[in-house]
Image (cartoon, rainbow, N blue to C red):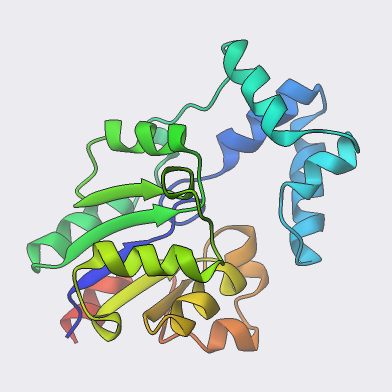
Amino acid sequence: MIHTVVFDIGETITRDDRYWAAWADWLDVPRHTLSALVGAVVAQGLDNAEALRLIRADIDVAAEYRAREAAGCGEYLDESDLYNDVRPALTNLRALGIRVIIAGNQTSRAGELLRALDLPADLIVTSGDWGVAKPQPEFFERVLEVAQAEPNRTVYVGDHPANDIAPAQAAGLRAAHLRRGPLGHLWADTPQADAADYRINSLLDLIGVISA
């Protein structure tokens, strides 16, 4: 029986559209250009931040992030950034008595913005809060600490087979691959995605998984 469900953030809970649009505007390049570059690096299995280095080879991403914040162009999230199935799925899971956690690779600021949306979740935390990021095993150790359940009674849900599915299973958790966003679609038919305990196309599919 599943006790806890833990959700990735980017392209699982939130769309990344605004994030990359903001970077394109900051670097003064067309949004479509940066979007295409993100797709290109993702297809190569690289970190999507490498797309920024294709535009400016010497970019210090952390320094530029701080400069954006200082200029009033920092991160922003609102209800429109959530996928439509997020609230109903999380609400239904909690109604089933499931502990719901949101934990992914995001900044501490993104965590603050998500918590301000008053989502139906027991805990929202980011890699920036923890000081450790996926796919590092320490991230999933922290997940297990907050899950308040045995690993085999905890499901980690994400779109990225390498960052979400494989390391979650290595930590003993069950894993659900979500076919969503560039990574979720690009690698949907790979052995890495096939290795997931569950394959879903919507967060609402989890209701059937948990009920079963």
